[in-house]
Structures are given as structure tokens and as C-alpha cells.
Length: 305
Image (cartoon, rainbow, N blue to C red; front, side):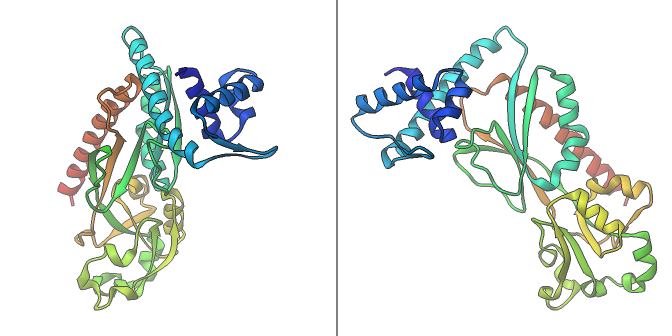
């Protein structure tokens, strides 16, 4: 079977458009159409339902597309492997990360990596949605979890645990005198990240019914959470490392550092393959080194509390 036909079919199925597939592949639309027609004739079944406005996979097309993705991906990896033998790592690296981690990851991970590897471009999706790494053709994902990840189809490596803390603005601390007793915390309203539930993270001995603990505002971005804390909208629950600049400048203060909140865990997730592309390999090495430094900083910070 002609590999080019599989590539063309995969691109049409991915983009759901003959025109866009032709543009991305750099061929005429008529070439795309004729190759799809020849492929369907060879297989003896229709793979795509098309109208003047839409293109959709048939049931047979859905199943065939899954196999085609594997074939095309293997061919791409084979080409990248040969190129990597003599060339510096290069190409587009597609990564998915949680929205709330943008501030942490761009601070000294992504920016530093791109300076060190100028031939590698990056496409970064900040989203609370857990993407399908393989189906959506991401090279890897960074995910947050409150427990161990279990997915036999992917390689998952723990980067480090993230310590959470309680933070308020300096003005909020001055005007709310009941912050001297941690058992009165339940009387306050909380500012949390989208993935957090205040009552789940707080120790059970704060109040008899943790369902009484209410969020004042839930935000899917650390930057927004920090601004809300600075504005005095409530008690913020955030990763300690994410708010270090505001702590150093005294805009924000940490309250009850002795209270141990449940940590979250940061994982690197990527497809389980015998061979990893050179661009992903160097990024993973860079990522793991960065994670070790973050873990060391967390340990150092905790020892000074």
C-alpha cells in the first residue's frame, strides 16, 4: 500500500477538510481527492462522508484512521531518527500543561530551554483539559495530580511534589484579627485554583464540617489568583513556589505555615515508545534537571520555616 495515500488520508481526517489538508501538505486539492478515491477503491469501502461543507469519518474510516496514525507516526520517527544521527535537535515540540502552571513553567523552564536549543520551536497548550497525548499528536504533557497517575499506555514520571500554602495580602492580615486561630479559618472565604477544592486541601481539624469551607473565587490561572489575593478578596491556597516574588516583596504574607496542606504532584507524560525523538529527548533531560532544582529549592525553603 502507498504510504503517501495513508499520509494524505490521515491529514484529511485530522483537519476534516480536503482544502486545508492540501494546503498543509503542499499539494493540489485534486491530488488529495484522487488519492482518497483510489484508497477507498482499493479498500472497497467509503472512509469519508463529504458534502460541500463538511468532511466526516465513516465507522470504517474511524478504525482505519487509528491504524494510519500509528503508521504515519512511525514513519515520522524513523525520519527524525536518521536526521538526528548527524544534526542538532530541531523541529516543533508540542506540549500540553495545566493552565495554572504557566507562571512557574515560563519563569525558568520553557524560556531557558528555547535559548539553549534555538532550532527547536514549541507549541504549548495551557489547558485544564487532559489531552489525549497520542490521538492529538502531542509530544508530551505535564500534568498535575493529587495521587499517582495510572495509564499503561503512557510513560509517566514524577517530577516533584508541590507544597501548598495559605496566603493573604498584608492589608487583609491587618483587618482580620481572627487569623490568630487556625480553627477560625473556616469563617474565611478562599481563593483557589480551578483544580483545587479548599475543603479537600485543608486539615480535617480546622472545623467539624469541611463542607462549610467556601470559595470566594475559583480561577484557572496562578497569575489571576495572586492578583485576587493582593486585592484582599480572601485567603489564597497556592503552590508556595508560585508566589515567592510576592512574598519577597512583602505584598503577600503566608499564614499558618505550620499547617500541612495536601501536596499536589507534577508528572511528565509521554507516549511509551522504544525510540524517543531527539527533540523530546533533550527536552526531557532539561525538564528532569529543572525538576531536581525545584525539589532542592522546596527542601531548602521547608528547612527554613
